[in-house]
Image (cartoon, rainbow, N blue to C red):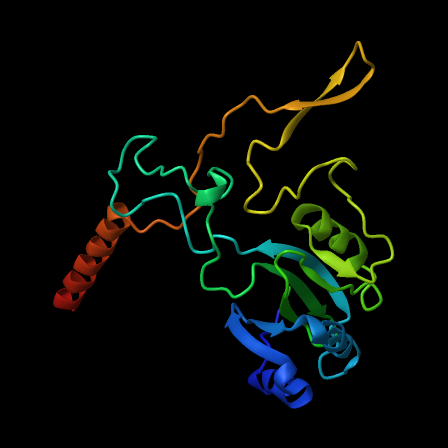
Length: 246
């Protein structure tokens, strides 16, 4: 997969002006950010303009930036052994509501992210749109631009509660019709809101209060503790030895 050349990234500014911001370039893939009011227009150009020709939407997903950059695990200052060595227990999904984590450096909480593919130019592009309202996150639907957005948008609506304005059939796709909340939101309790089981006597599914307690399992953070620092020291010593031998 070819990286997007600098000349093409400059075209974003030429064609879109201030409607598009180039956020970053990583692994040869450009990420651009678009405001909700420009979302539909920009995406139509990305597909229809021959300079871009991103005719295929390979993925669309939601993102919740609540607590972004924060972690309940202390991996630098804690000891190197023991299950509970680094557990604070206040991470997303395991907290009293008054102690819930708040967004980090991002201005808005919810975002929609597209991954586009141009087969004509053999390039990929990542497009992100932050919803303006955190209480009711909403962006225009892209079903009319890329038909494959249909079920992706339903999934993002179901799991994150992001509303896609203009979607022809916006309803849950993975959870039950009577499901309460959106399970991929960071403030959704990890144990869920209710327990569901089938009652053989009543011949139906019943909902009951949750009886289990949340438990912290595997930390999902990048570690930079003494183990890795020791590896760095060993590498530096080897480099010095090689230089002296040379």
